[in-house]
Length: 214
Image (cartoon, rainbow, N blue to C red; front, side, top):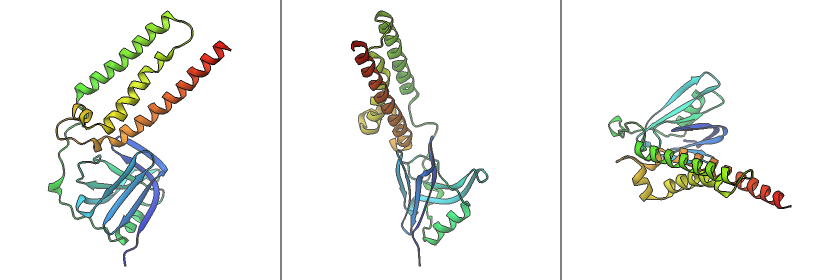
């Protein structure tokens, strides 16, 4: 009789990596689900999985299983890191009766990164331009920074969140035929970091202005 298998560990999805215990793997007969805090949840049906294999980067310290799949809306590299032996995880998945049945011919073609190089160049140019404008502003009103210092972080946060939520912006940034799912975990991480820095620097800016007038 199949048994639901669940275990806690870490994960690598695309360009992003989460350490233990931020990831959870759940296996049932009809679904293999990898849930990662901050990065999202990724589910695979048997017809989306070619194989689940042992993956070893560094014995004991960096090993786990790799899910080979054909889901074009998910990063190509999906790895679950485990503390114990990867063989136990593979056995647990097998005991759940999850059986990969996808064919190698269904693998999506992914040449290079999903983002257009022109979009990267424009974003970097705008980012640097905002820093340059802030330095000009700071040189005119020393020594206390003004709200313009937050502009680069605000731009970055808006860009990451906008790319995650706006199909129109995704069409501009992504290469033809590529999916936002391929870079979604990376964008979520960048949105979280830039949003956190935006909040911290906003608090520091407000507290500095308050102390100045106190």
